[in-house]
Structures are given as structure tokens and as C-alpha cells.
Length: 406
Image (cartoon, rainbow, N blue to C red; front, side):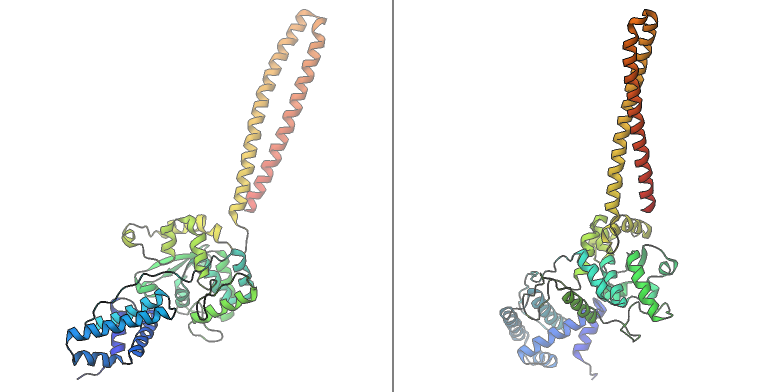
């Protein structure tokens, strides 16, 4: 009889049918180990117990064990999400080994530990405290929406050829094997700030080839460890001395952590449209996936025009400048309208003056005084019109200079 590791066979089959995610494997192994430890039995013994008993007794006994584990974990402060993973892993092991299992309740997931919104100024300060590699990693996460595990798996070929050609924004291709659950390929973009930090970091590593990882461990040509990046982010946050840090229980996540950068992207790239943001973040779109456009140029234009202005970290947000330009344009248009009205009034006054001059010439000295007053009024209108025209000209010149800088 062929001998094999029942746990490894289970994990391999889950990977084959669903996901090759290292995170899924780690969580499932840990959850099964917890269940086996709770009932003081091994995976092999569970299978042996089934072979030595009937279906009815087996399914009832192990359903009772699993329900007892749920109660134990709930009483000891585990979140509903952690309990759900433990139950899902046990159910999966039973399913893939053709083991019957009685009723086990499925709990509702409740988010207990919320990530708070991280401020743009806080990210900027974190970047200042970070080394070139960490700065590039954090900036990329905040401005692309990519998961930290996805960034750690990116290779140079995934940002080429646009990265070498200096495209801004630069397209990042995420193949299916790097996506969560390997559901399919997608792409996102990085703007000039991330490009700048990435180039600075890559200069420290010498010549690289298409298959080289974008990010590696310090001093070692080895794929970056995501947990180490989370730890570095924690330390940077601690150095900032943020006063509203919260940790509900020892060993539980704080409200400011690495994933806050991804939440920042979700919030500030939202102007581009929720479907586009979800696509760039690697979320599934359900049935809309069939109708959603994957035109890279369309995506790039939306990212550049609607997302980048709000994602900027180290340079002024162009939208603020654009608002000032729009306001000045509106003021100039109002002044032009006023000037047109003045010109109309001036023309009317000149017409009236001409008529009065002709009348004076006909009536003689009696009208000379009135004609002098009319001339004074006409000259005053001309001076006023000239001043308004000069102001409009100066404002238009200032506006052209501002638009050139933008």
C-alpha cells in the first residue's frame, strides 16, 4: 500500500482546486493543528477512527468536537474570523478525506479590529523615517493598492517595459499566479513618486535581470518577507509617537498597521470609480468581470486624471492648484463681461455726445457748457475702461504662467 502524508495530500488538493496561496496553507495547517490538539488526536487517528466506526456515530461525535472547539475559542476571546478559519479548515479536511461530519454552525463574521484611516501627512513622515527599500515598498502599497504579499512577489519583468522607458504612470502587471486565490490576472499603476523611490532603491542593488525580484531581503538576493515589512512599519509608527494608537488586546492587531496603506489607496483613488479601484486592488468583480473593460490606456487615463491627484504624498495636490485657476478664470470672465458692458455704455455716451455737439453747433453758445460736462463724462468712462482692460491683461498673464508651471 502506498504511504503518504494525509495533511500534505489535503493541502495539495486544496491548492489544486482553489488556491496555491502560502497564507491559506499556513492558516489551514495551523487551524487543523488547533483542532487536533483540542481533541487530543492526530489527523491519521481521525481517519483510523472513521474506519473503525459507523458513519452515524462518527459524524455525530466529530461534529460535537468541532462545536465544542467553537465554544472554547469564543469564550477565550478569539474573533469570529479566526473561529471561521478554524471551522473551515476542519470541514475542508473532512471533505477532502471523504469523512462524514454532522451539523456545525457557520458564524457571522464581524470586524472587531478596524484599521483607522491613515493620514497623508502620517504616511509622508513614515517615508522620511524609512530606508530606501522600505520607502519604495510603503509608497507603492499606498499608491497602487497592491497587497503586500503581491508586491513581495513582483519581479522586474512585471513593470517592464514601461519602467525602463520612463512612463508615468507606469503599468504593473499582476499575473494570475500572483493574485489572491489565483483568480485571474490584472494590472495597476504607480505614479512618479513611487517610480522615484523604486529607482533609488534599485540603484543600490546593481544590475538586475527580468526575473529578479523588485524587493529582496537586506543584503541577500532572496524574496522579501512580508512579516518583516509589517514589523518595520510598526516601528516607524512607534517613532512617530501617534497619540491615537489603539490595541484592544495583547497580541491583537493595532488600528494603525501596514494594511492601512491599502485602505488609503481605496479611499483616495475612489474618484476613478469603485469598479476601477477594485480591479486595481485585485478584487473580483463578480459577473461584471465579463463586461468590465480591460483597456490599459483607458485605465491609465482614469488613474492619471482621477486617482493620482488625490494619492500624491510628497508634492502639492494638483487639484488645489486647478481650483485656483478655475476661480481666476471665472473672475476674468466676470471682468470681461463688465468691460463689455462698459464699452456698450461708452459707445452709447459717445453717440449721445455726438448728437449734442451737432445740437450745439446748431444752437450756438447756449449749449457749450453742457457739451463740456458731457466731454468730461466721456473721458472718465474711457479712463475707467482702460483700467479694467489693464487688470484683465495682467490676470491673464499670471494665469498663463501658473498653467505653464502646472
